[in-house]
Image (tube, rainbow, N blue to C red; front, top):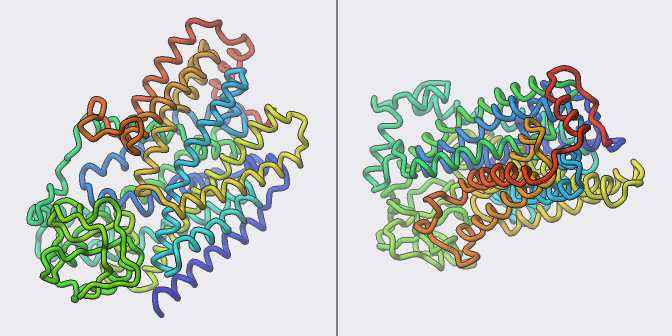
Length: 590
């Protein structure tokens, strides 16, 4: 059976499961919609949390980034997994005991201020919309290749599926759907990794295969370093980033993970405080399965890619090259007219992103790129986001494995997109309408508002997929920076510093968010005069600047708080209460 038919079957089955779960677990109240009724088991919540967090960036893009950047890509592994340790130890149990529906809810009540609540809502929307942009791009990449339909139609199909189970089921539907999606995505990630590990290193455990030996007796990493040297690339195991920038990116990702609103809200869905700790620990185990495998997948894919295409005639390329070429995510420019693919240092095949001529092919049958960069000898353009999805094809694995990977990529993207859409929905319906603008709104009215908000958010998210931004992981890294610079200090100080008042918290969140936003817009999107890598402040990249924003947030928050009165006694008593490690209030909307 061909790849496309198998993909339709496997993706169709998984979509039917997701929709069936949504119908079975339809939310009947705002408590069901926001926190799944507060009765989710730690095991189900652990799987749902892992799926909620292991987005398209983790499944599709992270291994691609590591594959191209080698050692420097380890920042994603260290940052994203380390953040869960912070989350489990410093946030999850305390926020669960506080017993609220949302992160802005906690900040609004802890800082006894609707202004603080509104600022938190704005921060949540910034983080969520930035993050969801990466997920919808991932949906478009999968659909365009494996279902061979237009990216726009693929994104629309994804929107419809997410709309169905997010809007109908709310957190209750999303939780159990995400548990199923975790099973799909981890199976889809591990099966090809095991196959390729056996194929290349004769070891069925990819993590061991990563440090293993190839059939010629050369270690995998030595082989990859040698291939890189031959082609003029820096060695795969050699770090190229400055240590300070590496440290700041890792810290921003780690702290951003602990401040992500769609992950934090998952710990409001369990019955007790100890269940919050347990589900965080289980989530870390489930996440570690994929993250410990990703470096091996990256090395396998990079080795196979170079050996398949480098200095080979285009006419001899396997089908996967032309298949991905049709999506516009891979391209070849025959700069020296020899009919061979020259893959060498630098990726300057095109000026920025390739522009393909409509219905025109070159003399070798390749799609014609109309904006080549002739200043580089490199002839091959590869979008990093295709590496995990193309890996089974590059390794010539069975068609059903290739189709399974497509289903896994969609599960990863849609699970996180649903969680983010719920954050957007609850921020509008609960934190703005119920808590501020329409305090007398009925439970039914709030539920309708939540579903309408989710529907609008689905449409906006779809636009991000149709008009995609940068690489998935790069966009997601910016969202982590926003979360680190805005939420994390306010939550940590709210839990552990009784003296922190509303004036300090609001000033800190605004400072952290605006400073980080300015830096990202300046150096990532060339606004405010733009700038090059040489202009970065202290050599810190936009992906790592969230850590600077966080430090400034802490500094401003603590400084400003000293000029204003301490919080009321009842708020200080509340802070004392949530730090006592026994008992927990039920999640509520008080």
